[in-house]
Length: 218
Image (cartoon, rainbow, N blue to C red; front, side):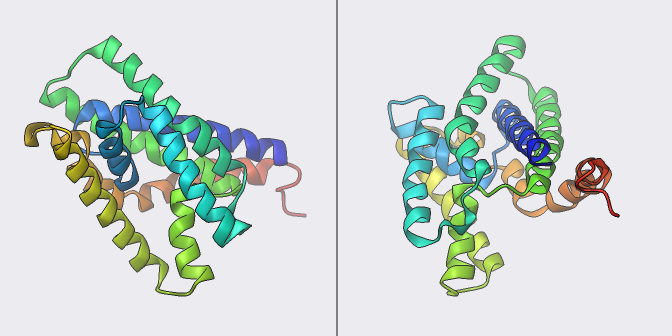
């Protein structure tokens, strides 16, 4: 059972990394944390994967100091491999399709949403830890009891988008390219992905776990 959950975690995170590459092709914005990472990446002389690794490493230090309960396999997989998967997938998509027009961007956005929800369902169901970004809000809500999780997460997402856009514009980016950081795709991922993730969990990933001998009901 553990092996299956590890495979599901790896597969889910790789698929999610590929989905962010699709979002970056669409230029309609990415999820709030990736918006921040894209903003940071626009002002530092590093590739996206290395920027993502260093940024998550700093947040991981916060996890170690505040609450290690949320650390799991997914935490390390996300920290060390996710950013490089985004880099790889974006480069391959650019090489294969070039800069898409509006119809192509809409197709990439639609595919990005579906693929991200599909991948998320795998590592959510595997339940082997959370990303460091997810952990920050969970720790503030459940360990420190400062505020309800949903309010903390919305606040964190808003801050990420504002900082990401500000850094992107500060680096010389134009409003015409702001979709690299934030746009309609950001709104969709922030508010409308839950039902689609639940759909894939009910139809795909939960039955996979239940079908294993350890997951079967007696």
